[in-house]
Image (tube, rainbow, N blue to C red; front, top):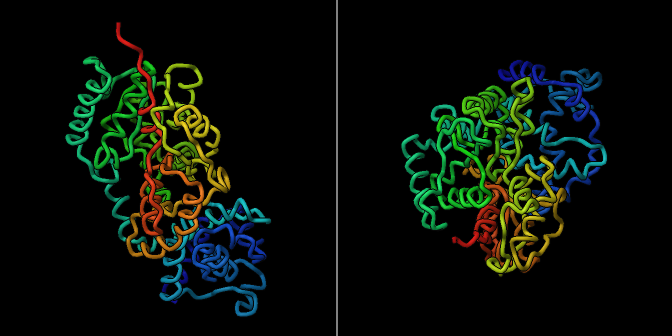
Length: 430
């Protein structure tokens, strides 16, 4: 009873005609059950999408639906939200859905389950019920400017180290990773996983820019491509993070913002950021996948696919493909960068989630369920016979690596940037 009034108030604040429609029209047909990797992998009835969204649907009906509010027991309404119900909401909204939206693509009613789940998460977040790991990741970003709390000094040291590695790799002492260069054509972002654990991805991107003769820079004010507030449903913090990134780009007077390979980071800034900020960007935004494809098409970089001879398949990150529209570019890149490309089935818009999205990797309490739900993805990978899985998202890298290992599928997981950098043919020096 103590929570009821607050939950109703928070729902009213977030309620739109679009959300109300989604909460009204579900007919519980069950078509979405086969589209959800949780439901398909585990076979558990409470893993189907309508079960996960019914918590918010019942609260909505108890407040707004004519029959649900007058006869809640008969028409699926809830008038009182107790602690037990909130625990179940946390368990299913945070712990049993990555908001990948595959169910939305397959829903005959067009219901956006991801939107309902994110609204549920936003309400729980305002009640202080965000899982600790996810909240800590957001807090680190708010306090330090990146979600892994990498200091400015360590970030610059890593960039300088990778610049030395780049110069050795391309045999050119003038090769640079430009820092805070005002007036550069584009600004490039990173996932904190790169300076923290995988700096060679930074070198790979720098090598591509070098080969393309690009005029680029990196900002020390704001360089983190991620925005985990997308996952918690906290629009205020999501807006703050997006504003920091666009402000850093404006400060350096660049012509374009290029997002590193991060599925949710691309979606959050490219497609959601303007909604959070309430205005359109004055600087165009693209993902690095789009830029790499352009370099290849225009002949700005030359690739030798023989440098990547092993069989490669591609995993479409949900937030970049299904929720961001980047489908053809990675396949074009791989057609030029590797010798043996094998398509995954299903793929593209209908590809299954890796299991690491929705902030799931940061919430250790749900790890066992996450790994169980990764079975369908591991089986997809295994069926290709590929020894390398390319993808364009750091969460997918970890999600795929853990899921495939858990289900006994021995493959290497890598970002597209590293496959492209490995295949680059530099012009011979005179």
